[in-house]
Length: 66
Image (cartoon, rainbow, N blue to C red; front, side, top):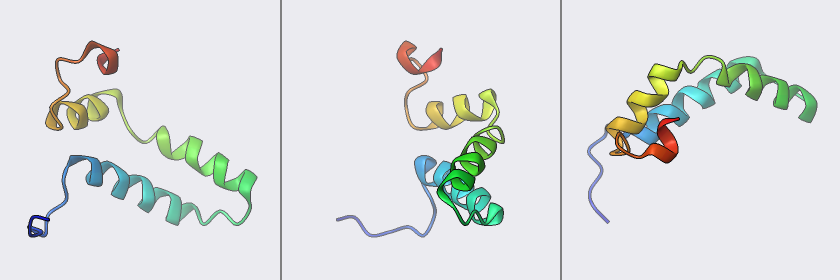
């Protein structure tokens, strides 16, 4: 396994943002957690998602570009 560089890769950055949003929501029930997940996803703009995908090498993949 390669040695860690200490910086997050593109998928890890997206999940770190999602985890931070979910932690701040502090949902205590499953229904509240699902509500928090739906709300957290609205914090990701379409352009931000495209940037994450492009940085991960998927910029020319039509399946994820639409």
